[in-house]
Image 1 (cartoon, one colour):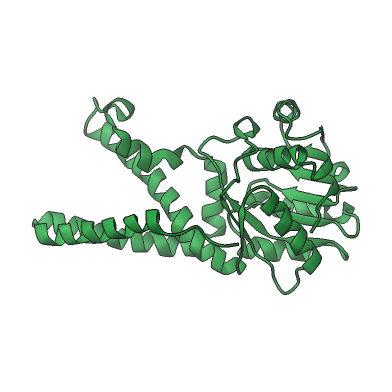
Image 2 (spheres, rainbow, N blue to C red):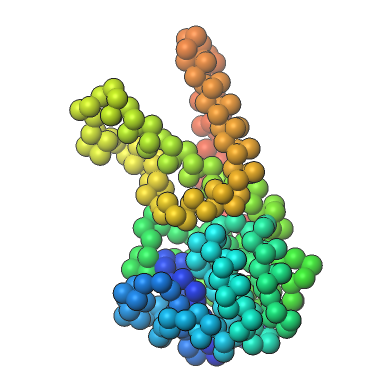
Length: 297
């Protein structure tokens, strides 16, 4: 379907929101892209980088004439934002988001929509450890997955417009139940972030209490850097993700703890065969990453 918005408003012009704005403007998918955010300097940078055409301070002014509103703020702010400006949306407007948690937030957003306004949940699975619009790129989503989470209430035309928009960014678009999304992402994204944050903190404790001369940056090789790269991500964003998906995250942390405990016990008793078996099982699972084909849309 042909896609063109007269006005797109992006609430939260950071890495994801800013990158989306760059693509919408470069490809001519929106006549005007308006940014709304907390920090004026960041919004000025967004204009300079071509992520938005202009910005406003009051989100109610920013959304009132929008065809599409993209909510790209930390997930814990959704309720406040929607309560503040949902009533200002015009009939026919579409609201979507980019949040890493979907189930409870999709339900929350659908309840907040005025009559004639449509919400479509979305999660582009792309990013960097660096945040902010200055890290944005109009290639950020190329080849990445974007999960859209429609419900029985989702307007079909709005769904197709959001799907087409993400396809235009170069994303591979998948459709998934919102709660299934949270289980899957809890396992393959949220748990790895927990592990990376916890590993860095454990190493810092080892340095402070046992090896004062340990230089984490100077003494580490590529393995530690690769394993903990995502620990440089936004603490604010990941705090909210962990809390909004807490049941799944806790369940998967417990599974990780069982795996660690099993390996620890094998090491403690000196079971070389058992250790090798565990490591070989992990190696075989990891090797599947490189041979699995890309998903179809």
